[in-house]
Amino acid sequence: MAPAQDLYVGLMSGTSMDGIDGVLARIDAQGRPQRLAHASAPLPQMLRDELHALNSSGPDELHRAALAAVALAHCYADVVTRLLDVAGVRRHEVAALGAHGQTLRHQPGQGYTLQLNAPALLAELTGLGVVADFRSRDVAAGGQGAPLVPAFHARVFASDAPRAVLNLGGIANVTLLTPGSDMPAAGFDTGPANMLMDLWCQQHTGKPYDEDGQWAAQGQVQAGLLRTLIDNEPWFALPAPKSTGRDLFHAAWLAQRLQGIDARPEDVQATLRQLTVETVARALESQPQAVADMLVCGGGAYNKGLMQALAERLGCPVSATDSVGVPAQEVEALAFAWLGWAHLHQVPAGLPSVTGARGARVLGAHYPA
Image (cartoon, rainbow, N blue to C red; front, side):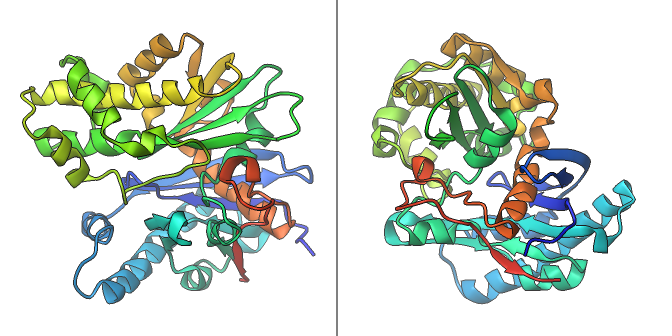
């Protein structure tokens, strides 16, 4: 039986690897979440460097990954402690903690996906029941295991008109919400979002990201480079369902496509921003129904230049989810609180209309407190 408590914690550290967000939510019997509190913390630089390194094969990586998982669990537990202190909530009042972990490999075509996590240790450190390993059941059922959040988006952001919900984390993924449809949601990854822009910004300015898109605004989109980036990557032409990550879009991917390109660094940054815009737009244009508006979450929602470019290219209203009461930076953490609720209540959150799996599946594995 599902517990009587209606308080859930969600944690998120995404493909951008810049930090950890934690959200405390109250979720009612119909699965409607109410955000109560938020806490966040940056990832320690040594751990962040190790997580980046572990995205590629290397020496003694099994041992290193295990140690990194332990360190990540301690960072997660610190955020949980801070979150509950801020909210004035005692641990026994929380039904469960949803913790996705850090994706290091995502290869659904080969039958596996790997998220670095230590959920048993996290349960010990926090005294909370932990729900983790959200992707693997869907992959076992023949699905992509991603995106994970469209079922949550359908509960929170549904509208009377067709709507898109765009998550701009390291990778961009879009959810399509169609009122009156038999499918609660459709969704898929569209390509890189902050991942390549952050990488290029770090290499050339030393800053972790391009704040407000100010650096990109100093450059000019290079049309030839943009065509090269899109046309020379077969993944962009694949039909949905599809998903991707650092397995494909990484420093070597970008370096290979920049060979022989004569462009200022800020022009490359402007072009990478437009790569996100154009691949999102083309993905939406491939769908049978146009959307009336778009809500945007993730760190990219605070990149003013990126948001303006999206609105200009899409020709529909584009706004951050803050406009409907959910801070953009907290949406995914709130989603994992909801996914923890869905697991305990045996609500299928893995949707065939999103992942291509053989059927809807209850996602996650539970580690009791």
